[in-house]
Amino acid sequence: MPLLACLTCKALTSSSYCPAHAPKRKPHTRSASQRGYNSAWQRTSKAAIAEQPWCSYCGKTTDLTGDHILPRAAGGTNDRANVSVLCRGCNGRKKDRT
Image 1 (cartoon, helix red, strand yellow):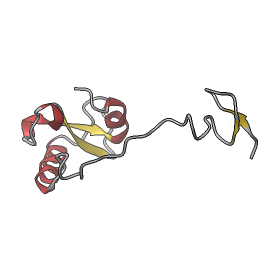
Image 2 (cartoon, one colour; image 1 turned 90 degrees about the vertical axis):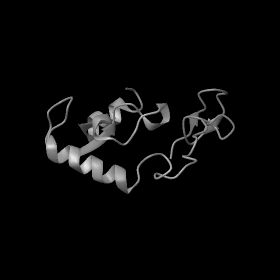
Image 3 (cartoon, helix red, strand yellow; image 1 turned 180 degrees about the horizontal axis):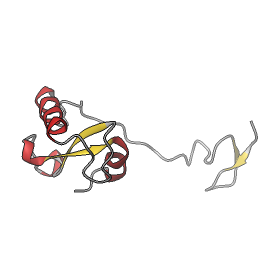
Image 4 (cartoon, one colour; image 1 turned 60 degrees about the horizontal axis):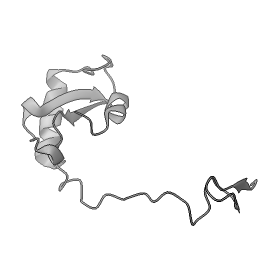
């Protein structure tokens, strides 16, 4: 494996950053259920996909997911009115934006 210069301090390393300057990634601190993805959410998501079997953004009909319109962290609920159907690609690009 070739050695690279750390993007911050220019020390030789095997990745873009040396261990001292590597970006810190924050892991999820709460479970999926605590974040609003419990069995009730799964039922609501499946019902939304059954009602509308296409992505609201691009129209794709495969690999669909239910997505909170107003995120739970911002006061959204698991009600059907707060669910949009997105393909996995559009959902990943949307992330936590409303």
